[in-house]
Length: 118
Image (cartoon, rainbow, N blue to C red):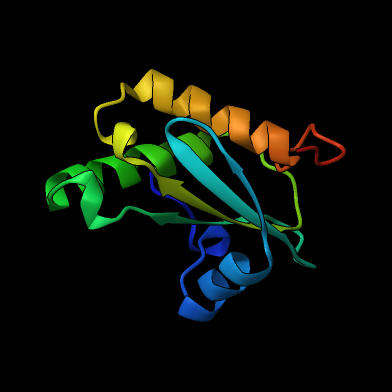
């Protein structure tokens, strides 16, 4: 089962808004950018640059990130963009999931978080 369309960032203007006005958190595998919105759900976008590897590698990382986000209890009111760093290409799924969860918790995006902290 894929990520529902309702919670995907699909348009260039949405990505641009998050990059221009959003807050940033990072760890050794990922960079998370978030922008508060008025929606009753979170929306997610994923960025994998060519620096990560060939199309097979980039698509695998994107699939893993989508699955991690799909399985999490997310809250409401954020547009989020997860960008993979070079190390993400070689990371195991469990490590990528832990890195994603850690960033989302720090940013206050998960459903049980009440306030964002840096």
